[in-house]
Amino acid sequence: MFNFKHEWIETNVGLLLVLTMLAISIGGLVEIAPLFFIKNTVEKVDGVRPYTPLELRGRDIYQREGCYLCHSQMIRPFRDEALRYGHYSLAAESQYDHPFQWGSKRTGPDLARVGGKYSNEWQVAHLTAPRSMVPQSVMPDYPWLVKNELNFADIEDRMKALRDVGVPYSLTKSEYDDNVKKFGAQTAEMLSIPDARKNLIAQAQSGNYDGNSGSISEMDALVAYLQMLGTLVDFRKYDDDAFVKYR
Ligand code: HEC
Image 1 (cartoon, rainbow, N blue to C red):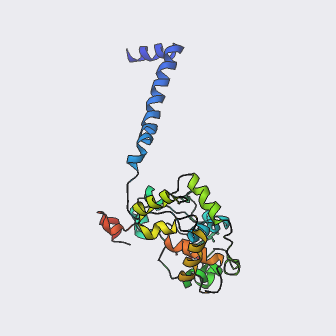
Image 2: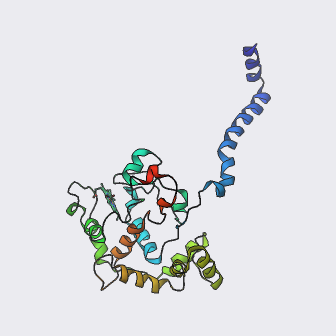
Image 3: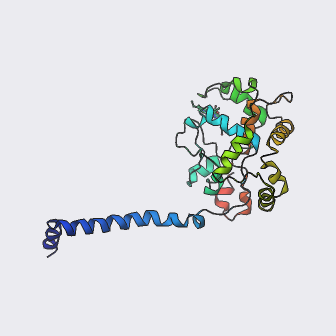
């Protein structure tokens, strides 16, 4: 009886086509439909903000130097990952990343929560000569980062480009006011495009990331970026200690 029906379907091209389409569209719907509700799917968390101008330049250098070729920035929701790196990455944490740096190649460790793991001095020494800190390391030396002065002549344009794709850097007074409501006055100030240069210089000087307060180097920017990775969300406020307690 069953065999008979099967043969009947397979020899009836029109019917086979219709049934095939039906089967495929069910599969498609199951995958696609949830994306229409993505706003509800991405968990809302407090604390995530766009990068400050200095961190943004640091991120550019991270991409220029190809750090992503060896480092991922996404902690998977598995126990071994959480034990090693901390709380698994949330979609909300990379909402202002264009392009995102999730990656999958891990010649080196995941960097999604490397912020605050080491001192600035360690980061500078490690980036300049990784084997001075970790003798077995296969990471390349980046000695030019401390020597190169940071170019931030086009910082406003970089922020404007990100604003065009939805990152809330503010250009107008009303955008600034929205940011004050959303992120608080201090952060809103850092996200103001007209004040970008002033803010970048102030953060580099007060942070003194490369240990040399005289000039602003590419190292200042890269270390500022590394030191904030994964630090924006305070996971103690959320109710899943299972992952938090290992951090
Ligand atoms: C050829 C692959 C490779 C490249 C390219 C690379 N790294 Fe690494 N990185 C490693 C390896 C392997 C380690 C682990 C050993 C060590 O600490 O040096 C590491 C470790 C690190 C650590 C310490 C992580 C931790 O949790 O201990 C940081 C921070 C880091 N890299 C940053 C960078 C940055 C920034 C760049 C780009 C400027 C970069 N790496 C480029 C391979 C690489």
